[in-house]
Image 1 (cartoon, rainbow, N blue to C red):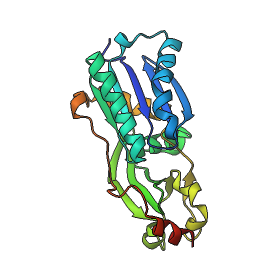
Image 2 (image 1 turned 90 degrees about the horizontal axis):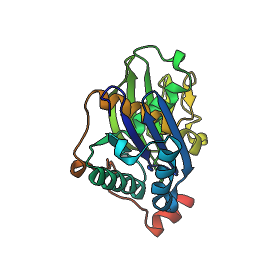
Image 3 (image 1 turned 45 degrees about the horizontal axis):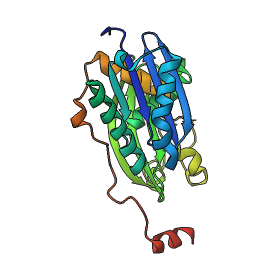
Length: 241
C-alpha cells in the first residue's frame, strides 16, 4: 500500500472502553465498545467487522498501532498481545502509541481552533487506587511534543503542585472520576472530558507512520508506570473509611 496513504489499524484497551480505528487513505472508521473483562473476547471480531465495513482485507493493512499505556494492567497486555499477534501473522510492523497523548489529541480535536501552536495540556487519567496517570504535552501545529513523561501521581498531587495557578488546559477521566477532589484547584483552567478515542488513535498512528516510527512486533511492550496493580484488603477498607 501507499506510504503516503497507508492502511492502519489502531486499538486501545487501556481504559474501561475498547477504542478501535481503521485509517485507509483519507477515511477513518472508528468503533467504541465496552471494555473490561470482555475486551479480549470482542476485540478481534470488532476489528474484522471494521475491515469488512471499509472493504479492506487483512493483507491491505500496513501496520498495527496500539495504545501502549499507561492504563489498566490487563488492558495494556490485551492491546499489546493483540497487536503483536496480528502484526506477526501479517508480517507487518507495529506502532506503539502513548495512550495519554491520545487523550490530548482527542481534546484538541473537539475544538481544533482553540489550540494555537505552543498550547500545553495536562492529561490526568484515572488510575484507580486514589492515583492518577499524568503527563503533559505541547501542540506544535503538526503534532504533539511530550513535556512531562507519563507518571503516577497521588490523588492530592495536583492540588499540592497547583496551589496558585493551574494549567490552562486539563483533560482526562480523572477530572470526572474525582471531581470533588479537584474543587480546590485555582479557577481559570479549561477542563476537557477526553478519552483515547479511535479518531485520536488514528491521527497519532498516521503521524507516527509518516515519521517511520514503527517497531518490529517482537519489540512491542506495554508502558507501565506502576508496579503495584491492586490494593490489599486492609488498604481498600482504609480507603473506604
